[in-house]
Picture 1 (spheres, rainbow, N blue to C red):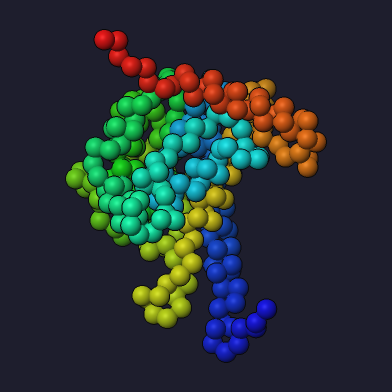
Picture 2 (cartoon, one colour):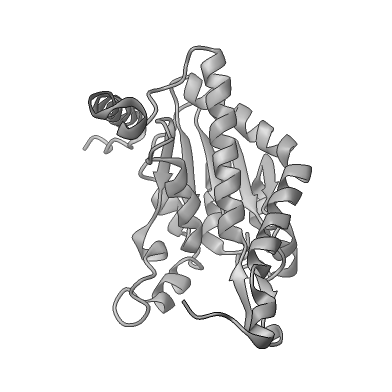
Length: 269
């Protein structure tokens, strides 16, 4: 491994330090909002419903972090659209230009929401670092119009610094019952390496994952208190291969039953 000498060496550990500050600030300022979000999630899941999760772009990452993975449990329903979240094909077909264009198209959110018949106890978490793209904004509007409480996970500073991409002039945080601030700066990236045009190291992913797992843990604790915690996906390293497989099957069965209940049924002809 090569050592980093000279001016470049000054950046060693800089991102880790700045990311740690964001996590500390989230702990200092956002625990009340996270607790409110966990309360909403616990009511939804404990009542047999679902907490639906939505994000475009790299905000897909916390959606998948919530469920399904080891250390998670049914009751959270991930909703992602490949057209807005598939970023490895940077150019050409399915390229980044198209993905960024699509997430700005008004009317798409209603087509996504039309696939579901939401339950009376369901809720929605929408992730958007900027909070200014049309599709996440319309997802929040549409969810609220359908009676779902909406939790927005967004950068308040970035959102206020951005122009709304929706014809209403509103942002995601304008349509949320609970707002959890990512505490990341406008532009997201934390480290200026060579002037303002060379800022690198986005902080929103770390903030999103930390907030998501805090919601997950707090919700699990509330459900466990009531004897309502669904089967948890648990590694074989912890509980052994047989029990891990049993929990896997039980969790997926539980998710299938809950998800089937909200899939919209075709109108009779």
